[in-house]
Amino acid sequence: MSKYRFIPFLLLTGALCSMAHAAVRPQLTRVVVYAQDKETAVEIINDSSETYMVQSWLEDTNGKDSNIPLVLTPPVMKLEGKKQGKLRLVVLNSEIPQDRESVFWLSLQEIPPKAKDIDNRLVVAIRSRLKVFVRPQGLNSTDATKAAQALTWSMEKNGSSSWLKVTNPTPYYISFGELAAGSISGKAVRLDDKHNMVPPMGSQRYQLPAHIKASKVNVTWSAINDWGGAGTEYKVEVLQ
Image (cartoon, rainbow, N blue to C red; front, top):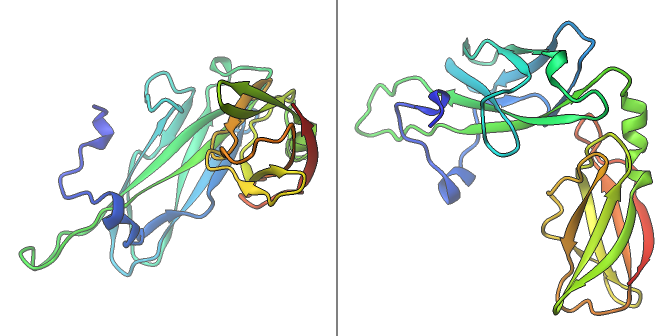
């Protein structure tokens, strides 16, 4: 277990967490780090009137926190109520791929103040996380915005299941804001696994709902931009 995840109080998950709101949160849902920059600031906000401690750490997309080519400071900080704070990221340039983006998770664990009446108060600690995209020299926001337009689509069958395959020829990760498919005459359906990113210079598959059995489908998609907003929406007809 990671040394960063030993939290000495109750963590609520699942349905209970969905009813709670984080006191400490990142200002944005993602951050883009450029290797040539000396450092990149990550703004965090304490919406509560109380002072919180904040733990932060980095992981790769497999949940491992070793061999991360970024330095994050401070790993623990005190954030007063209704105040903003900053984390800082520095890229270890020699340890990242030079021809494509890399992506990591930045986790923020809020540590609330000790309850004055500990017997009658439930302490809820919420964990937030955001994606960190690391770009080597030569990659930029303008080209990243255009990357979704370069995607190509095809259909594959595996037994009784049908899949959409998307190929990404660009050096940028694609995160879908919208991904829907439907038969030419039918209503488009949002695909549940749209959260699976398309890797740079790679591909990803998305399973079509069982009721879509047509030999061609309409696909609608948009990508999330560098600021967490929805980009341009695209449509294409895909043949099997």
